[in-house]
Image 1 (cartoon, rainbow, N blue to C red):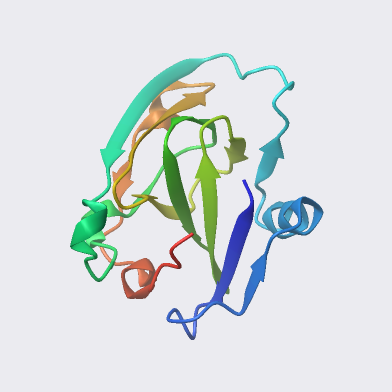
Image 2 (cartoon, helix red, strand yellow):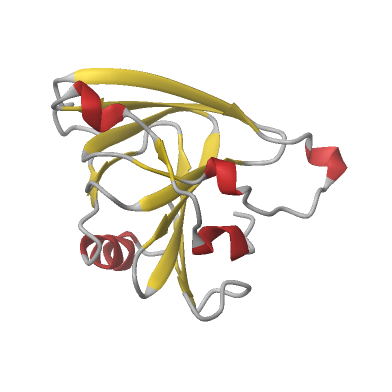
Length: 155
């Protein structure tokens, strides 16, 4: 991971801050209960589910918006990016975080965060979620979320 964009919930068109230093990124993520895991950290053991998504062809240059059907919540888990590049968007009460992730990145996520995974245009990405219990792996749709108003930074 190399970039974290922080948006205020009052303005989802332009990030308030864009962080590129790992220590700054880790501090911001820790405030939301998220931990970046080093590559040498042992993998979580438990139930697993693999996901894959495809970005729109890069030559189409569509205006990117988040579809409400892409927003979900799940239980506490570890997410490992296996292939490609993806942007993880997370919503809490005061901010939205957009995290650029690539193959090999791992992080732990707390339960209940509204989130969506946006593949980089022209890229196919896959990730594996691991949780202590199978029920934590279920992606529950969020009927209405402020994330649909986000203009995601292309990173």
